[in-house]
Length: 353
Image (cartoon, rainbow, N blue to C red; front, top):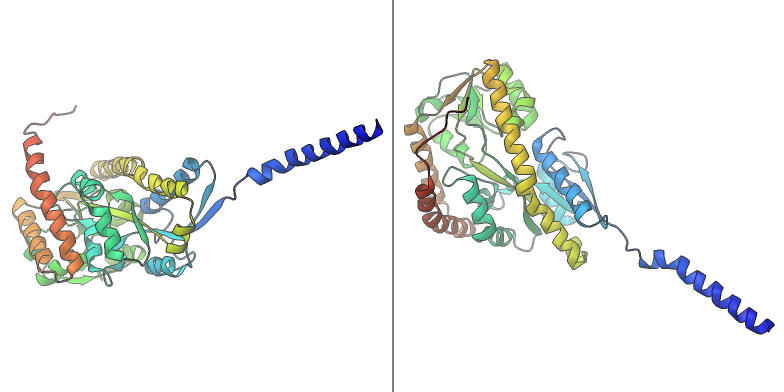
């Protein structure tokens, strides 16, 4: 009898041990990634990364956690790509425009002039082969995913009337990418400055005009306090993409379902971050219009046509093979997309009172 009781006691202790051990045996370790943006925390570009990081945690049910850092907290803004590639960062939530020196085709993923609209750019990326071409551009350096979208930038801030491209002649102008090349060719003195240096330079007069980003991004920097005119449309960059860069080793180590979580969180940015960002941009323009501190103007139609034709010539003349492969893809898409959108365009408007 004693033996039976002893055996029974041992069995109970053994089962209790299994029960107590079960949670630790079943619990999966939380995957943690160290991710940095090239942006200050106050900018919408960084807020987009915050939304992405939160979504990764929610969609994964807490199995994956993103430790997100702002510019310079681990590496300088322009070093995010290299830091991800060598493994200093597990991933980077950044912008392709920072690596065009090494990858000229990155221009076509960073932003688009007003060749097609925001929806068209998004459609080309998601359904027209853009994502695959982006990865092909970077090759085996790292993994890349579209991870957010930028609405149109403003056309620029200035203290001089600009009604045609020749009015840029002699202006000290801050901009980037191919728009800077075009303005240099018409006689502007183009410089590239980081966000924090632009407004002080306008204030000191070492800059005459500048463009940086979308309205809600520009306003906290104080452009409206040092400029007389704000121009639209931002036809030099009617839309843009943010990118998630992932270290190859970290991506390979990730379980298949968490890979899908990362990609799903990137895709949701198009709905969650973009719509909120767009609404904030609209409110920012409305605020400035009501304050009347700055005169809001539109570039004339003839100037807009001139700008876009110059962009096409620049793109057609690029010699980089990957640039041309991607540009041909965009042109083939636009030949189908743009005529259809013209059919759907409405020649009427509603006066909202």
